[in-house]
Image 1 (cartoon, rainbow, N blue to C red):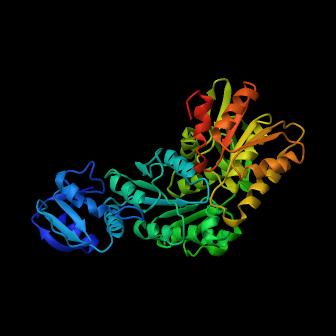
Image 2 (cartoon, rainbow, N blue to C red; image 1 turned 180 degrees about the vertical axis):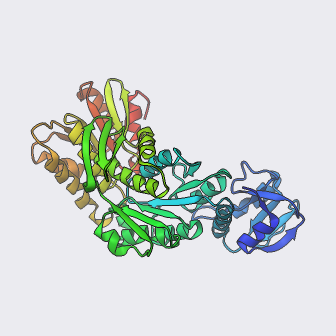
Image 3 (cartoon, one colour; image 1 turned 90 degrees about the horizontal axis):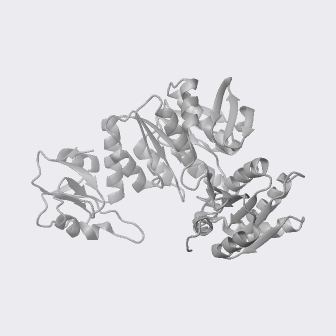
Length: 446
């Protein structure tokens, strides 16, 4: 998106220090490695970096315009604008872009299932609308701006995934996106180590509708915690897998009916169905017919370490190790134990659980024991000091389990002790780098 100098000044309330660029238009850049004379540079700031220090490099690379908080005017620049806060200016320009293109905005968040729901929703919306959505790992302030500013001018539906690590972060994203439809997939224990309680997590997630359009629609998991926390006077829709009638459950396919309509996912897992319910409700609010919604759902396939299945040297690997918290761990294990009763569960530490982290890991061990029946013959391999608590719980009931500290040790154990043709399920927080296990089984060096 290109902006006139007048738009840049008006949107950011900038003080003009130099303006020899009347009549020209500029796009936004935060990266001196790709900048050119058509860009205006914003040097973003964070805990460990200060992009404003790279203004001279931006000018050297050919940029003719930049924002500054310091009031420094460099030779070679045609436009210099002074602002107070670079990230707020970035968000203000993103808001201006939204106003100019004016798509329907869908914002979504949740303790787990955000990206899956976003990808499903993108598949569905593309059945009827020109749709653009958040790329992977772009769900913070900077990523939201990048998404908005890079959407095509003919975008009809914009889908924004919103993540957070603390209170106030999603509210800021809501303020500068003014969503038409908001979605909360669930409220669990992800980030409880930072926020202290599920109540605070719910409060942070419900910030998503703080600046929602009053005539919009709020869609959320049917949770008493969400219901008592949300502050939105518009239409509210709540969904639950309890409202679903399953018609067929098998590996690689789930058929179900919801509100008298039939749908299909070409993936297993009740939690995926629950994510799909949020998508169905949003699709219906956009005026998409159930048949087209179903067409979109059938297209969806998991991405980037989210229930990705592949054959590796005789093993079937289910890689769900993009991230993990107690809720997503339980949801995934339910599916594995139901559809793959003879599998090998490779489980790692779950992060950011605070002072009760040992308790949450022991809970997963208890959960596994509750789900096992006479048809289950699972083996459990854990990696990490916390995941070891899972193994200790199940071993007390006679379930086979071994524990390791390093991914490389787990790889060697699997190679030497687990027979071929076994299904191996990988689940851990991203910090555990479980892709090393997958790569090790492929024969790559760790």
